[in-house]
Amino acid sequence: MKEIKSYDTDEIDQAIICPYCKYHYSDSHDVLAPEQDNKETIECENCGKKFVAEVVTTVDYFTNRNCELNGENHEFIPNKILGNNDKKCSKCSLILYHYDEVKK
Ligand SMILES: [Zn+2]
Ligand SMILES: [Zn+2]
Image 1 (cartoon, rainbow, N blue to C red):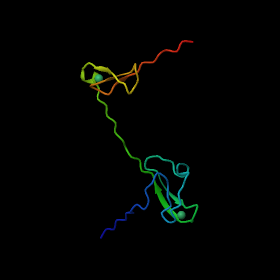
Image 2 (cartoon, rainbow, N blue to C red):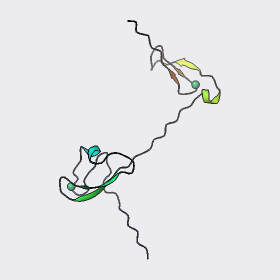
Image 3 (cartoon, helix red, strand yellow):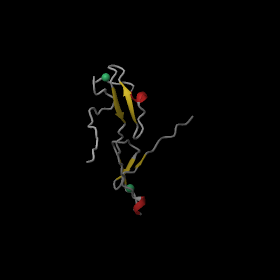
C-alpha cells in the first residue's frame, strides 16, 4: 500500500506568517525571495518552531484589442477623461497621447 503525504496550507497571506504563533514577518521578501517555486524551511524568530514557507505566484493575463493586427483602421475619438488632446480608438484599446512640447 502506498502512502502519500501532502500538507494542507495553514496560512496564506502577502507576508510570511508563522503557522504556530501567527508571527507576521514584515520583512518576508528578505526571509524568502518572492521567486517562483521558492520554498524554504524557516525557524520562527518569535517562537522558534520550524515551518515551511513557499512562494506562490499568481499569473495575470492582459489582453488588448488591436485594430492594426486585424488590418482595420483606428477610429480615434476625443476622450474627455484622458485630456483635451488625447484620443482613444473606439474600436480597440489604443490611446494616442499628445503632449505639448516644452520650449526652452
Ligand atoms: Zn512562531
Ligand atoms: Zn483601434
